[in-house]
Image (cartoon, rainbow, N blue to C red; front, top):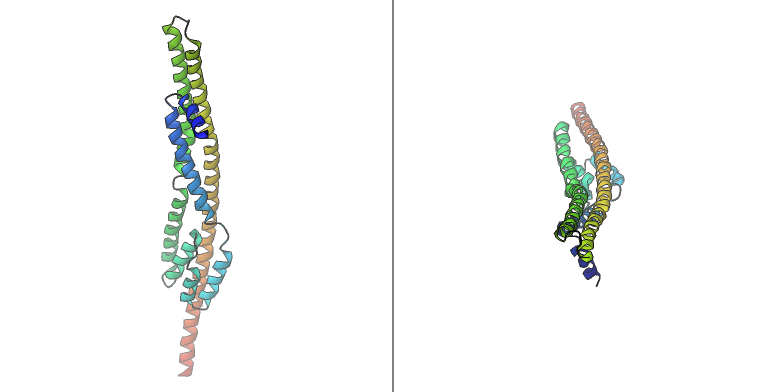
Length: 225
């Protein structure tokens, strides 16, 4: 019954009702997808980073990797990449982390342009429906020398008003969600940059400690001789 009422309203919206319906379906699909996507990556990774740092300081790389198994999130992927390549040059590790971070940001931004386009195009489609509806009404009046069927004239006006309303109903929440998700991406990108700095500090400290232990072992060996 509800679907029938919605279809009746859409059928009164004129030729732009179908494109608007398709736009609303795309918008709703993206909103649901991004809501579920960001819901998976809530929470802080501060404790995990500290735990991995302690394991690396102890020289237990395998334990650090095992600690990251099963964990999800952009920061976790960056940390896992750094641990796997911790024996390489720090500049090389920084390049790898930047690549991982850029890929993760692209994943977060995926499909968001659809919301932007829908929010921009929906009011224009509604306006087009309004214009077509008014043109239809004037054509009826012109064909009957100003004495047309009131039902036909009102039908054209209704199509114009309904088309405009549908366009705004779709555009307003879509624009709100686009702004909301874009803000989330911006915040998470900032956190990723902070995580990258923390991870590089861990790698640099671990590299310094490794060099210190190596020199100390060499000194001990030399002294024992």
